Amino acid sequence: MSYSAPVDDIVTALKTVADLDVRLANGLYPGLDADTVRAVLDEAGNFAADVLAPLNWSGDRVGARWQDGNVSTPPGFADAYRQFSAAGWSALPCSEEFGGQGLPEIISSSVGEIWNAANLAFGLCPLLTQGAIHAIEAGGSDALKQTYLPKMVSGQWTGTMNLTEPHAGSDLSGLKTRAEKQADGTYRITGTKIFITCGEHDMAENIIHLVLARLPDAPAGTRGISLFLVPKFLLTADGTPGARNDVVCAGIEHKLGIMASPTCIMKFGEQGGATGYLVGEENRGLANMFVMMNSARLAVGIQGVAIADRATQRAIAFAKERTQGRSSTSSGAGMAPIVEHPDIRRTLLTMKALTQASRMICLATAAALDNATYAADPEEAKAARNLAALLTPVAKSFATDVAVDVASLGIQVHGGMGFVEETGAAQHLRDARILPIYEGTNGIQAIDLVTRKLPLEGGNVVTDYLSGIGDCVTKLHASDNAGLGRTAKNLKDALDALSAATRFIGKSLASDPDAGLAGATPYLNAFARVAGARYLAEAALRDGASSSDIALARFFAENCLTAAVGLSDSAMNGSATVLASEGLLA
Ligand SMILES: Cc1cc2nc3c(=O)[nH]c(=O)nc-3n(C[C@H](O)[C@H](O)[C@H](O)COP(=O)(O)OP(=O)(O)OC[C@H]3O[C@@H](n4cnc5c(N)ncnc54)[C@H](O)[C@@H]3O)c2cc1C
Image (cartoon, rainbow, N blue to C red; front, side, top):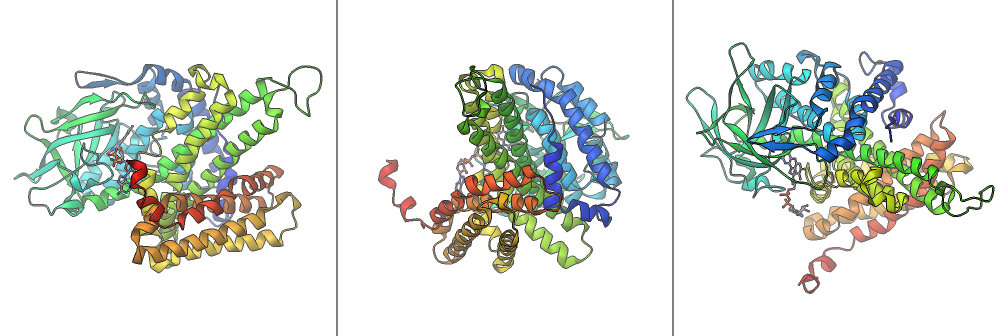
């Protein structure tokens, strides 16, 4: 089945959460107008449908291959990547100083959805390159920026993120890769990294690895980690790739999904030490890497939206074709398309509503990042930064959990045909399953939300956010739109429950941290459902809202939001039921 980019849904989300019309009218996104936004999204949709989507199925079948340290991507991938770069897509969100187009995060996230929906395995390489560009821009010396960024921005070279080691995954304090300073100011890197996406491949002339490593005299734990740039090919005097650096791919993983994306075991320094260049200051590497990780976390949330949308498109198309049974609306004597059955309609609408809610949350996060960049008033910029910090773990976790749930529902709609590979529904579930794991597992995101984000500014960031949802409830009550059904009441009930859970967790963190940690995942889920309901309601309350916007807001509020009350309650259970259950796990 071909892919059709959901440009209207994306534009609705942008108008709602990024105030797109007002911002464009006020010139707040330099060089952008409504026609350009539409044209960029339409063009991305065409490229994705014509070039990337046709490789999704074959990429899954053939997979990436490793031989003697070299990795080949499936047929068509290298050419698609060349076309992608030549068309300027890799440069879209990057700084103009290094050859980029400087488009805001909301556009970069929107087109990111389109690439990943068409072909998630392909989309990962530009995603990580983008993160690496951010980290070098934020922490690198001028010389490093001038030497590496233009070629990474143009897409000639790709980037990687080398954090994970066999004994250091969620907890990087156990990281063992070593770096030793040399007389010429470079560093000699030795160690093994695992699970490195696109650590080796045949799509670009050079691969720029960003590697976390420890200096010999570094303090223990995460305070003693530094960040290094380690190119696959060292550069000659004229800046072109020359001699091979001492870094090799020792193998790739056999996985459940994203088969076309090579997940590499990387060995640094088997021949005496790979040459690395320090990014930022010694022992401050994790702070620099967090720049990359935060950008990548939102981008992974967007991958979740992408898969959820693709699975929904496929399921709707199937449900219109497949006939079984009779429905109350059936005409004639034959069987009805399954889309007419109430249970299938509920499933499809659940998929659609969860997808649009996730899209809204992710794009609200992107809009906050843009506001932090473009706001002239420093206080406004700081508030936007805090909002982005609050929403990032929610965007990453909720959208990726939704991807898995929606892809699974998509299989259900297909019946037995969903379980066999030929419909493509199964690939979405296999591909989606990594999303809640990489870039910080969703469990770690929930811990981040409750322990670091709720306390921001003494709790004022979350309080302000919840009060914004209260304003939405007031507007819903004032609206006389009967089409919104019980949206106002349900949002009010869910907000009250979430506010109580927020207060409970805030108090627990001081007196009984385990109580807050035990409830972190249900709390994040409740938070996301309330946030999603708010954005969908705001879309429905906009001037010019369509009947579909209103129906979707109502469906979400009456079917997907109600769980937030129960989840908030679970978040307030404390730690007793969780920690006193040793017998159950014996
Ligand atoms: C396909 C793929 C691509 C990847 N790409 C990259 C890449 O490009 N670069 C890179 O560096 N890494 C990459 N990774 C690694 C990925 O980021 C890690 O797998 C992930 O961070 C989890 O680490 P782990 O696998 O060691 O799991 P662990 O850290 O061992 O976690 C296991 C479980 O325990 C939970 N857990 C851990 N600590 C805590 C805690 N303190 N409290 C509560 N629960 C906890 C986790 O949530 C998880 O459920 C990739 C992995 C895969 C599979």
